[in-house]
Amino acid sequence: EGFTEARAREYAANLGASYLEDWRQVVQDPEVDIISVMVEPAAAYPVIMEAIASGKHVLCDKPMVKSPEEAENIRRAVAESGVQLMVFFWARYLPPFRDLRRQVAEGVIGRPVAASMEFIMVNGPLDGFTASAEYLQGYGGGELVTFGCYGVDYLCWLLGEPHALQAGAFPYFYPDYQAVGMDSLGFVGIEFKDGSIGNL
Image (cartoon, rainbow, N blue to C red; front, top):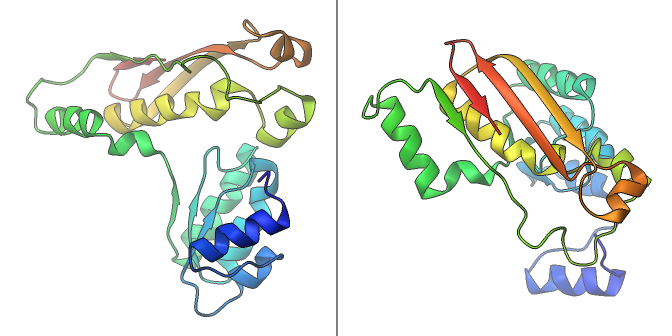
């Protein structure tokens, strides 16, 4: 994303990889076992579905797709095909998070009744980023969807299966976010099946 063709070819060459203009060539290549899908959610669904249909395992960026219907179709396709799919939530692999989960699983700190997280983008949005209607359409939401999902994933990983959820998102910061109604501040409250509560 953001590369010229010349820069993309150089990037691939530096990795010892081939530059291909059509992603279908990669998905249909019998030598490829796993597909890493790192495109915006609006464009990811057909890539993921074709990869699954081709018998490839899939690693994809978050948010995986932009609608619950697409996510459910993917879940069914994975279950029927026998391939594996993983949405890459890197926060699970940070040592403090893994250690806390281990302590919970081993009963070191008892059964949690509540967990709270804050997820803060230091210094605001990424350099050069400007909120737009196209971005919102492509990602299915603003910061609560694109970055808050890390916190939601971790709370679910730590506390188990959710039972009920309440969320709110607001275009509180940044004039460009406000102009297109894109959230820059949000909250999520989750009640889990064991009665514990998670807050983000």
